[in-house]
Image (cartoon, rainbow, N blue to C red; front, side, top):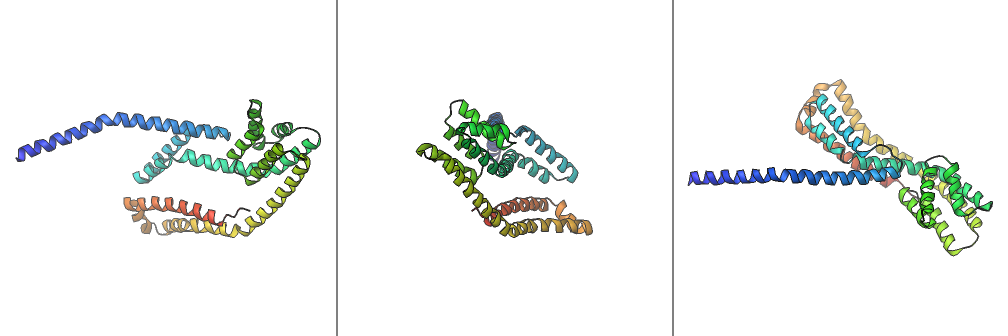
Length: 280
């Protein structure tokens, strides 16, 4: 019975290993296809925001950084964590770049509204006024309104082109202006008077938002101070008393704990920043 049991166990293990070996090519093919689809989708999104770095380069940089840090620290945990974070790096880069362009766009938007209002007062229509923004102002607002005009020239209604702009740019001021323009174009009326009132409303809202940002700036500063102080203290301990910190860095469990600390601290920063951010 013992010999038969051993042969049964051996055959079971052999069948299991054979199944795993046969499944590996299918798993690799499936993962490669999913990765290709994901990178192509992120690449198209980055191209919409005129971000010229390809996602595959971001993944390669993360992998290279993981190899270098792993070789310098001698820790496969740090190397694996950095390489794994590279899978999310293109999406993170897209989010950061979109936020940067949205803030730059919003800083130029009041000047664009004034230019559009003056164009309407001079007798031009809405499309011609938007085209003046695309041709005379600086990026990123000229690029974004250039995309609006390209879509309009290809047959997309101007209202839909402007709504697509609100999906690319995260700005409540832009949404307010686009909704006002679309409603005015549907219902009619004095568009010049509507624009003057719109500019005045947005200007007052901008003043109020700046006042709120000034009042909540202390909370945002405290977030980054509390997030950075533990790491600054750890670096100080490592310089002053390296023997005190070395066991935690040399032990795989200590390295894994540091990785989890970084992960949860990033989540804490994001959550608390949302708490102290107030939108008017």
